[in-house]
Length: 381
Image (cartoon, rainbow, N blue to C red; front, top):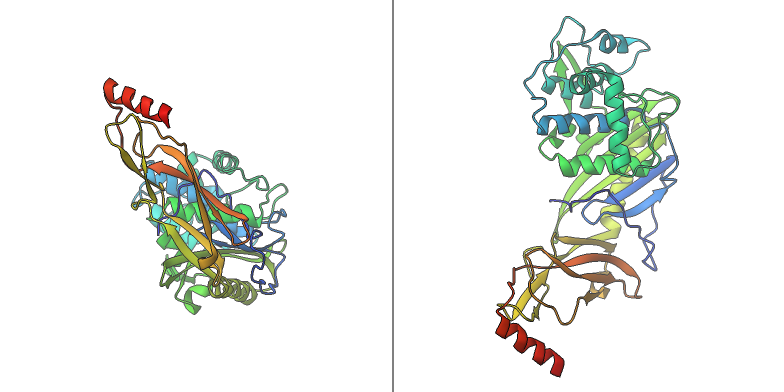
């Protein structure tokens, strides 16, 4: 499923529903559950509270590395040196890939080391390979966070080790994870790899849900004393209306088992208590309306992207929609040109979503005679 293109994930909340399903009790300091198809938050607690993100930081590290790969500034088969700084990540017994300065690992190997093994040494090597230094890379991380409007996020390092001024929030971390899934589907497969062996050292992915439930295919675990046990988890399940993808962020649980259990609980509830509906398909007209002063007398109107909405189970039949557009609609019109909007409302009249209404075909301006004749007809009306 392709998600709508966004400048930032501005997740809608479920407050417009008079009787939204009651979320389960979640044993975590902060959490958030989002249906990525509709960009709707289904449940949250303290989602904007700043927190230590631990190794969830590595999602932004990976995002920038994936960008470098896409822009051909790196290649998966390219080898990178292991600096003394990367080697020194061994101090303090953190998560490691176990690389050293005598090695020249490939970018693909380092990505496995950072994502599957949560290697701090791999994260530093990749950051230096992309930006020349960790400091330069951290500047890029913060620049990207600012571009997305992440007001509760500031990075000080590329690994997630606890450091003064290094913080994020459940909502901001969900934005990073959602953008990674949306922007780099070709690299998302790294997050479902269950184990990886490098230099004869085999390590298992710490995301227990990958082996517990086949619908889960990512993303990242984290732990520090300050952060507690954290997990960003994504799952996708098939329904009669199509596939749905949920994303959860759970911060500050008490154990590896707890972060997996609480995340799975949220996902199961999200699928059971809510319906995901595709209201409009981008290749199908919503309405065909008259157009004036053009070479065609009518134009089909529709949406630029598929429109999804998430509703309490059984509420789909109660939805109301309203088309807002200029009348009369005048040529010329370009294909894809916004000419109005569609408002989707709950049974009680609350606005749930508003999406642009676009012309699905080009309508060129007619000759002078037709334009004059249409002007007269409009005046008579």
